[in-house]
Length: 335
Image (cartoon, rainbow, N blue to C red):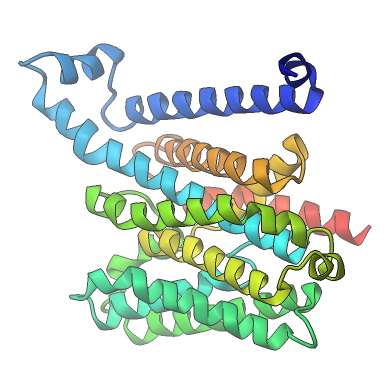
């Protein structure tokens, strides 16, 4: 039995992919800590944790600037990738992504409204973003429902709603131009300035979302068989889709509330992961989480070092990568 498991090509591929992902994650962590306006050598890094007379400036850079930023980026990557994986499985559409179908826009509008109109209530931003994401998901679901949630209608309704909510965000920036200074980076999806407070803010949502996604993987696999077969197997299809959509909204909202409108992670990562390890959600979900964290950590490192001393928001870099990928998927789908 053990021999079969080792020699099975699919099992071996998953082991190799897990090994590759773990290696990339470790490289990303090391590179992200070392690179920046202040270079940190391996000797500096180990001295911080092993020497009593360590350089306090380096200590502050590692512990209070780079480490929380890296960890927040990792959690955001996990959440967006999981949200995209869930939505793509529910909708059976590789173009589904919390940013493209309007869930991120709902979370973004709610978060931006609180930040601009009630700047002293920053603690309310995460729950407001969640309500905005859920509200957007419900609106999309209601528009698309016609004796069942038709996949194409869901995607088209999401694209239209995303544009509509984006117009509201633009209106807020015009009407309250004297208050938007603090939200400019947030709208572009930036990780600079993220602290341990942001990490602790996102962590509970990530834990709940990861647990829910792993638990829901078997239901995603049943839904992949088709609604009629899923009903025949005893699954309440509409309730399962609704609960999984709420879970995807929770994951996307927690990411948006922390770093703003960071798009395309939920589109690219599940799609590439599916090409590597297949569509079985028991494996797709954890591997998407792993590669989501890897992608955002590497992208943020590149965004803050490629044009040094200037720093790009990671959301802009992901847009440069994600938009051509979206067009590639769209063209392939049309053909």
